[in-house]
Image (cartoon, rainbow, N blue to C red):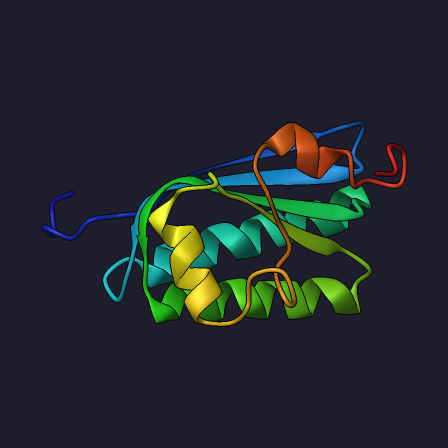
Length: 130
């Protein structure tokens, strides 16, 4: 980047016949990149609403660090999703440091359910009940 700041990479894909939207974040989510992460989450939430999706999958497997601002962005996205009938499910590797950050914050499982793969998250859609 010309401004010398790191950015969070992301991709938004509508999958499972519009019943789920997947957003994959990459890189570190900290004070320098939180706005990019929030923008990616907002873009994914908007795509979920347009698609009539029931599940928003946030794939964090390529995120190396997640600061408290990133946790806050995830919680805000989850709360907004619940108001629209969209469940937010995180995708995390079992031994990933980001998973530990979310556990210490007390939000993993209770506020933000997590699975190990995107396929597992897609099984939570109403078309594929778990």
